[in-house]
Amino acid sequence: MKKTLIVICMLGLTSLAFGQGKDLTSAALAFNSAQKMLPEAQKSSDFSKVKGKIISAKNYIDAAHDKQTAAPALKSRDIPKLWRYRCDIYITYMMMAGADAEVKTDVEKNAKQMEDAVFGSARKCKETDAKKEHWPVLKQKMNLMRWGLASTGVQFFNDKNYNEAYEAFKGASDIADLIELSDSLSFYNAGLACEKLEKYDEAEIYYKRCADLGYQGALTHVLLSQTQTKQGKSDLARVTIEQALEKYPGNMDLVKEQLNGYLLSEQYAKAEESMAKVIAKEPNNPVLHFSIGTIYDNLKRYADAEKAYDAALAIDPNYFDGLYSKGVSYFNQAVEIYDEVQTLTDVVLQDEKVKKAEELMNKAMPVLEKAHGINAEDRNTMTALKQIYGRLGMDDKWLEMKKKLQG
Image 1 (tube, rainbow, N blue to C red):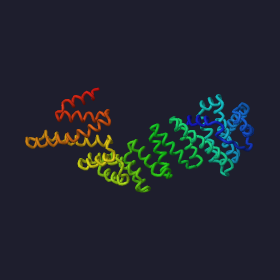
Image 2 (spheres, helix red, strand yellow):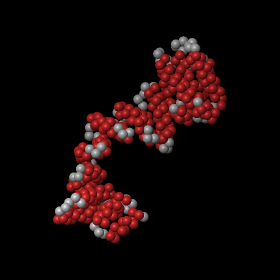
Image 3 (cartoon, rainbow, N blue to C red):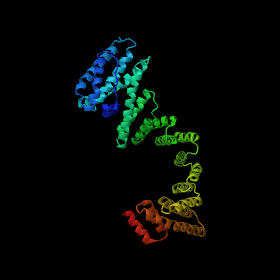
């Protein structure tokens, strides 16, 4: 968590409000004295006067901690005080790093020690404070740290500094767990940052927490399913969507994700059923008609595919994907027939089949030419047209397309 601690330092002292504490040891006295001076230091950004007191408090609390660790002597009622002050003093020391290069260097160099001092002490305070005399105060301080980390994480994320954003959101999430707060937003943002870094296993954990909490409704279930798919957990991704549809029946984002799963697993019959539901909700979406057309193509239901592509192109006549897929559908049917001709011995039947294949090539040609006019750089379109021109004996056009592909 080294980067998380550095992020905390960068928040600066203005991110937290500091309260009074009770005398415990010399550490408490030095710390309480420093606390009184902090507001003025914050205003002036001059921590030279308070720095010595904070370092003195840190040295005293380190000594108290080391002695207690080596030979426990504190009364049980004083143990949570020790952990509270150790955590509190280290937080204050680390926050000073935002304005003091020497302290910042120390924090970065001893990140593991700082982590244990803050988070380890906070956990110990929570565990040992049976009377709740110290943990509630420290809990408030930790919550302010959580808020600061979450806010800074958003800034990092917006600046595309995803590693730093991840560390900040992870820190905020860890603190939320410690103080028993359901910080759905930090969990969600941590998931987004993990995705940007391709940490899909961690993203899955954060999205699962959001989904269980009902945060962002169906969306987090979709994101959860997608991260599972990216890890090769297609069966689990399918179950995630099925369970989400029970919770959010008819949600189009979930239905579309279910459709994508069917297509990836080549379950075209189920994909058709799912797509029909989507189209019924969005009949004027050309992409949906195109998508079901590709499903029909895979099922070799070419007449249905043609109708679907025509429906897409009726909505958007210049829709490249619709044009290309319609043309290629004709082209592929023709290729299938040419392959079949190679197995035939009946000359008359061969001629009939070749004529049918040429008809399909002629149907494909103007559609693909229009697609080429819309996207002249698409090599798949050019390759299909080159083969069509060759099959139909259109030598000039064949040569022209060959040059385009070579150039």
